[in-house]
Amino acid sequence: MKSTKIYQVLDSLSVYELNRFGKFVQSPYFNQNQGLIRLFEQLIPFLKSKDQSDLDKTMVWTQIFGEETYDDARFRKLSSELLRLYEQFLAQEIYDNNPLHQANNLIEGISKKKIVKLYNSVVSSVNRLSERQLEKPASYFFYQYQLEKSQYNLTSEFEKQFKKKVKFGDLNIEETAKNLDIFYLGEKLKLFCMLLSWQDVTNISGTLLFMDEIIMHVEKFDYSQYPPVAIYYQIYKSYVEPDREEHFFKLKELINMYIHLFPVEEAKDIFGSAHNFCIRRINIGQNEFVRQNFDLYKEAIEKGILFYN
Image (cartoon, rainbow, N blue to C red; front, side, top):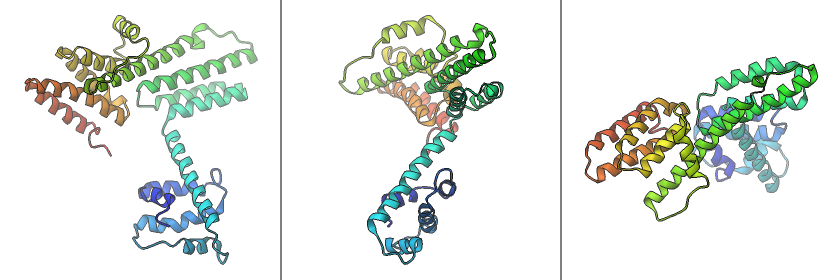
């Protein structure tokens, strides 16, 4: 039994995660198969205690189905269903930790059902959920774009039903477009920086569509208040103008200002770009960047980004 995929997956979870999954398994909204509940109940003592003794499938079967003759195909099917339930649990955990997803789905649901009487309360709930989103990478602006678009649809429905004229500003079209633009610019710059980083260590070639136009646009307008655009533009500059130290110090300043707004894995990559600049300078004899590199490591540790498990 311990060699099965479901056991090995569950064995990697903490006690806290096992408890949460247990509640998920027992929820009739997500699971109405009593066999899955009983299977999980048989596994949980071994999982929590990290018992090294063997766990025989026929013994587990007997605990679930009593005196019924062991059916390996049926048991494997039950194990597969528990694994699928765990996959649903993982997706639900991600959803529960993403207020913008919740906000967007809420307003989309109200709009589809045309429940315009809930318009004011839903808009308030959506704004509250949106404010709970602490991280603001490029994807944040895409979710905001979706949210604004759904709110536009709901506002249009509200206007139709109650025959009210809505001001252009209330239609949030400009805000919708702005969020889409910030997502596009930030994500495109991020991808371009990834390409440049690979080109820095390999012989791969290539470019991305519209990059010249994007760079010209970002240099023409002020995007310093938008973290993904500001940071990835500065990383880009550190790659294409490696001799200009001011790009590093500007990047370091932006990291200090904005790094807490990025997911940990993305924050690691951003720090990595700054580290790479330091290493390149150290390799050509500029030993003052040893201290700069040390400071970056120190900041990453203090912010809980380095050594994050």
